[in-house]
Image (cartoon, rainbow, N blue to C red; front, side, top):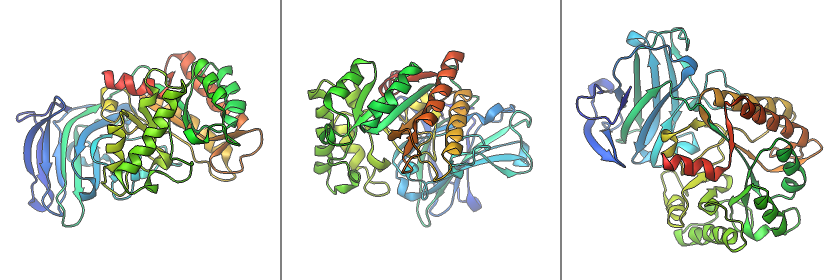
Length: 412
């Protein structure tokens, strides 16, 4: 719909109650974009050129850069017919969704409206008005609305909007956190039964402790074609929010990075990939201390733990989110593991059909019913692996390591 936006690109700007944002055309990372600053407390809208398409599957995406997420209440993507008599809406509450609370590139790529279970409204399409239907309604209009916090001015740069974006073979990453012993005894045989590889996030100072893999086992994983990536924090409890200073955060992430390097566990740049403990990527909303420490320690990709936002587009759009990869599924509702597993499989299959990457996250494994909501029964994990394998055989998706996904995106 629009990309490399400059004056004359057909993009228009308006504001709530006539309070039109100020507009600049800027360049960032080799791209041209339209930078808007909303009037204090009033939303601004950026409308894209008219088009005509049924947008099958709801495949739409917008790439933008957020200056200060603490000043944004929400951003919303609209797809509608003429006059928005029938339209879909995907509204992301920045104030309510942790993964949206960061400064930098944001990719808005909503999930199908049918995914209600364990997917927040912020991550999926909902009907905004009338009776729209993807694949049937002829959509002609698209816009994005930026709503600031009360009394604040929000500053964002829009670089482009796309419909029908899709990769013919998106990636599916299987990751496991903490280096638990059952990942070697229970998870590994199932992975290899289906010829799948996985990325294991390691807490260096817990290696060899009771309940965790030994160094020999980790080295064997790497020799078998899997990979170890960096995790933490020291001691395994809490997150990087345990610390209040940049120096302490840098010390923690550097220790775990160096553990992989010193013990022969770094493979093809896997020591540059970080798995954020508990998904807590900031000390507070809009704070950049953790992300700055990761960047200064040489990390280029970080996997989060927010299943609400789930999968992201493959290709160049994902490049702008390579430092903030999020997941498809993880936390299992007590007493309904079978339902949760079925939902995860459906999400993987939908991601593949939409040309989106999917990253899965696991912790503990066992033959019995999980004792906690981060465990999974071996038989159910096998169902997920079988589904991934089926997509590979069909040629509609490809299993990949987390490092491969990030570096492939950065190379585009």
